[in-house]
Length: 135
Image 1: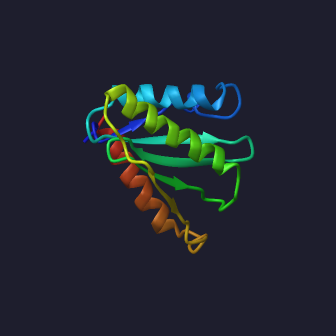
Image 2 (image 1 turned 90 degrees about the vertical axis):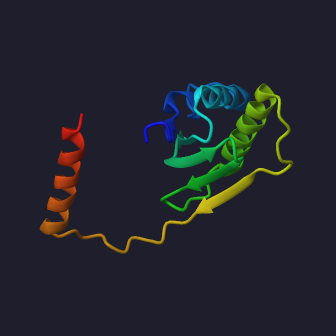
């Protein structure tokens, strides 16, 4: 189960202090190489205005972008960085990739349940405690 998801350090992806877009794409592709076949990666990104999360499957050449604030930030640059990281990954593995990498935007349906009852909070606490106790 732990081999299914990999994480990429946000210190290698953010817009501040992480180098130019090419360096960030190379850093991400190097992390993909360290992963297991079929592993997906959670990639946080902070544009300086707010953060978003991307889910990348480099083997399938699919990326999902999750932006909870529904803002149109400089997503063009971020999408290009993720796209280039997959292209670099394919080149490093010596395989020919797709001409167009699948990009999907996951839309947050809205703030439907803003208020939680004490019962809801207790359920989450119990789940969290059970999870932490396993370690």
